[in-house]
Image 1 (cartoon, rainbow, N blue to C red):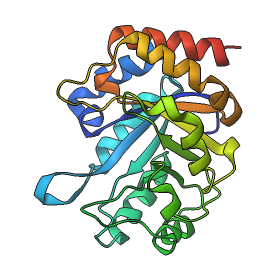
Image 2 (cartoon, rainbow, N blue to C red):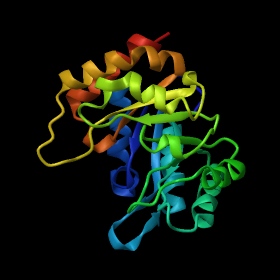
Image 3 (cartoon, rainbow, N blue to C red):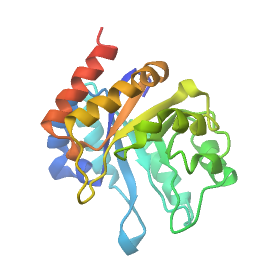
Image 4 (cartoon, rainbow, N blue to C red):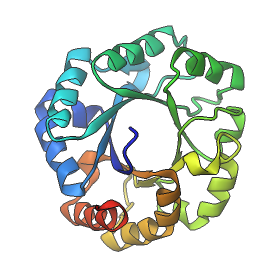
Length: 236
């Protein structure tokens, strides 16, 4: 995605055919210009699972009709061979997606610069999303990086996260990712979201974007906060 603005991550639930219309409604309520679709994820003991390409194509068409760009994001198991995962992202490019790699550890195994380089060489437009903890293991990538700050207190230490992520790429190419994963007992209020958005505003302006996790967990009140914030930063 090259347009400045807000993107929303869409997990396998969000991009499944029966939920795509509801996902689009959430994207529109948030004022999103981008949807980051998780087209590969890790499910229990079955390992990495790929989204059906026809489902991805339908989601791209649905979003495109409302001027929302789609980025296909792969979250592979770092321990497994990645030829199939990379090929799936190449297929997603053919149906109109940008592409992204979610580089995170798995069962004690971590990414390496050599492993990341395979993805970067095969996919010249690839962006990366990762954490401040995993970032130093990836080496220099010089691509758009989305830094994961999705836990309740992650944005409290934004400067620390940006300093560690800057080992991957120029700081002006680091976009924050805010939000909270579904966890028992974790409550994110709209006030907390507004606080985090305010703290991330300058970095979002400098880098051209910010993303939030994830579409089906965004309440109407949170969508209103995201829309207000995005319009304040990027409205014509």
